[in-house]
Amino acid sequence: MIEVALIGNPNVGKSLLFNVLTGGKAHVGNWPGKTVEKKEGICRYKGEEMRIVDLPGTYSLTAHSIDELIARDYIVKEKPDVVIDIVDASNLERNLYLTLQLLELEANVVIALNKYDIAKSLGYKIDVDELSRILGVRVIPTVATTKEGIDKLLEAVLEAAKEKKRRRVSIGYGKAAEKLISRIERTILKDKDLSSRYPTRWLAIKILEGDEEILKEVEKSRFRNEILEVIR
Amino acid sequence: MRMPLAMLNEKEEATVVEVKGGKGLVRRLSELGLTPGAKVKVLFSNSPGPAVIDVRGSKIALGRGLLMRIFVVPEVETH
Image (tube, rainbow over all chains, first blue to last red):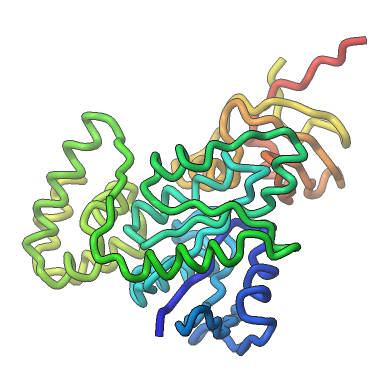
């Protein structure tokens, strides 16, 4: 079964899309040990079964709030086959911040450019192909309220799930930071366990940012002194 | 004229110029869309309590303490 996670900012139509994909039949529980609702459902399309997991709506994937941490942990640790990033087409700039974080996490992203009708009625012209080229992922315009684009979205999810190799897009942070990032990456690679569990570049960036959850992980490594030396 | 966002009344609009705070706060608020250059509008203000503001198409509620750290230049009304 293909495992698919749904993620997006608050108010992008995520719950509606979840209901459209699963036919409204959701298994509702809690995330283990946390009083945050977890919704799961099954979506069948062209003989394939997909398990759809609804992640909490967030603006970012730092470890500030329990919602963000749940979403991030799920993507890093459970490694879903595909992550559908629901983006509000009428508010692209704000929404793409989360998208970039997902790409940095090396998630297998498919973008649902939702509320496409609203964007059009506001007079926005979005070059979907160019957006897809820049981000290196599939971008599908959708209108969850009328189910427009849903078949195309599912097609894209199946295609993405089959792909082994993905084009990676990375965001540059300028010479000085990049130097530190690659130095940290090199030391992370010495720890086979750590580097197999996390994307190394992402880990290096989080260490530089001083992300508490990640620093706790690094503390457990045999190479912690070497890794942390760079930021001292 | 720059002033804390806390000084704005309901329905007033402004542009963010600076967030005064530590690394964590600046990052958190920028994730919520409060970066220099961002347009904000006060939707509801319960002075001296919290306020609801519109920033980049989202409504967010902020406490007075945070509102004092966000510096803005109010929109000049032209009549």
